[in-house]
Image 1 (tube, rainbow, N blue to C red):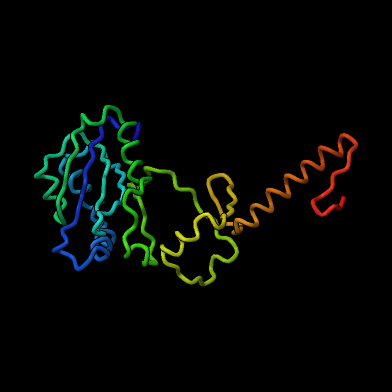
Image 2 (cartoon, rainbow, N blue to C red):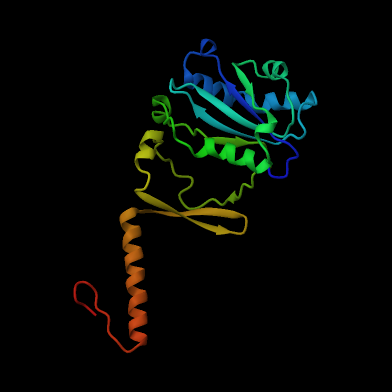
Length: 222
């Protein structure tokens, strides 16, 4: 995005009257690839400088989803955007609001990271993968994942709420080799603390013995 000659920010909403509930609207946009299709339409019409884009998903307090989209463009008429996105309201930010491409990057990442409005109930109860952001193909590097032992095992799908409740309770360990990665194992936070403490004790023991001393553990053993 920092190499884009210009950046235009779009906001896309969905019309609640056209969908039964917020989850149906989110699923429809994802299933139909509505954002990508809209931008392909604008690209064919010559409204975009390049095909690259970055979108961030956010929720209204009512639970309905909307998207903030960074596009490689300098101007899109509101009427053209409305025609390309027929699912709800749209807004176009003026390009002069973003003095540099870095400014636009910071603006988009703010929406990825912020949690001013927490996930609505239907998101917390969902077992689906709900991505906070998405991009055009090739915009971000995506390392290949190597299949590891246990990948084929059937796992019980957990709700997003249950997974969020476990945040900070364990650590996933991955092995990275070149441009690929694979899952190694999961450690509880207690195991991680024990590992850090044990490694620290070993380092202290090695250092002390190198100076002719003796190191004892907490239970008094050497």
